[in-house]
Structure formats: structure tokens, C-alpha cells
Figure 1 (cartoon, one colour):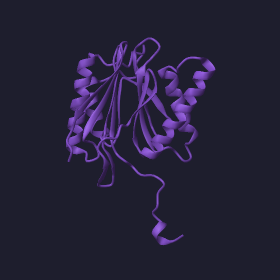
Figure 2 (cartoon, helix red, strand yellow):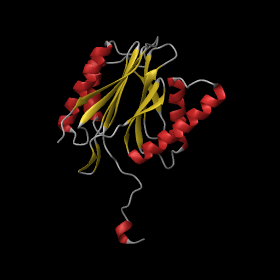
Figure 3 (cartoon, helix red, strand yellow):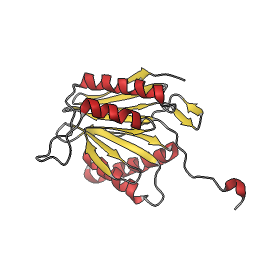
Length: 223
């Protein structure tokens, strides 16, 4: 092997941060719009959130080429499901499909760190958090990406969801109102942007509730 290729890697990390919060009747999914490699910013207006179904949205950080490939697979699998069942997948069903899709590629994984958010069949907010090989858990809130280590302790402090080991099991939804959750997400990102060079430019926020889907955006630091 020529020496100049010895350190070649099929992966890159394009940075970015994703956050999702589930409430009693809503779900908030957010991600910043900066796409980087190393110390270079490739674009300041890249959406990391993908609509998988009417009530399921996925936010992904990591290697964006793998993320695009993953989105394409999930989209085609969902189309087949719709033709076979004449309905859209529920958010928990989409969560299982995403887990299976990631696990199927475990020996050469998609280098993507995902948060899936949406509403379940009862209209409750649900958030599922993943590692790169499909291990997942339903939680009340989650952060993934380059700013996750900064944001997660803050969310733990503010939201403190019940332990899944406690019996009887409690709902993993946050006690905040929808407006409070949106403000909390904006605070998370403005704070992470101060310390993480891969997070910034603006934050894209998607809010799901019984009325439908709403989009918001908030500018962040651009340096």
C-alpha cells in the first residue's frame, strides 16, 4: 500500500448537534445548520432534520454522506410499508425500523448519530435516541452530536427524567409546556455554540403537536 494512503478513512465527521424533547402532547426536534470538516465550514445552511413520516422526524449528526444514504433507505422502506398497509408508519414503528436498518450495517456502520422524534398513536410526544449500530431507547429528551456532551448535563439538570429501572414505570415525558421546551432548546444551542466550534450559524426547530407541524429558526454565532 502506498504510504500516502495509509491513513485514509471511509468516514468523516461533519459535526453538528441535535436535540429532541418529548412532552405530554408535543415533540420538539432541533438541530444546528453548520456543516464542517476539520477547521473548515462547508456551508452555514444545511438542514440535519429529515421528515420520515407525518408524525416522525429524524435529526442526525456525524458523517452526512452516510446520513443521506440512511435517509434514502428509510424513505424507500416506508414507501413499501405504505403500499402494503395503506397507512403511514407510527413513530414507534419507525424507531424499530431505524434500529434494524442501523444494526443490519453493524460491520460497516452508517457513521450517523440519530435522534428520532414524533407523536405516538396516543398523541404523546416520543423521542428515541440511538448509537451508530442501532441500540436505542425511548427517552423524554436526548442530544446527539458534537455538542451533546455540553447539552446533555444541562438537560439532565433541567428535566431529570425518571429512571427506567423504577417500578411502576413512569412516562418518559417532560413536565414543561411547549413554549418552555422551545425556549429551553434555544438556550441549549446558544450555550453550546459558545464552546463547540462545530455547532453554530442557526438552529432549526420543528414542533409537532395535534394541530400539525411548525417550523422555527433562531440565529446563532457565526464564528
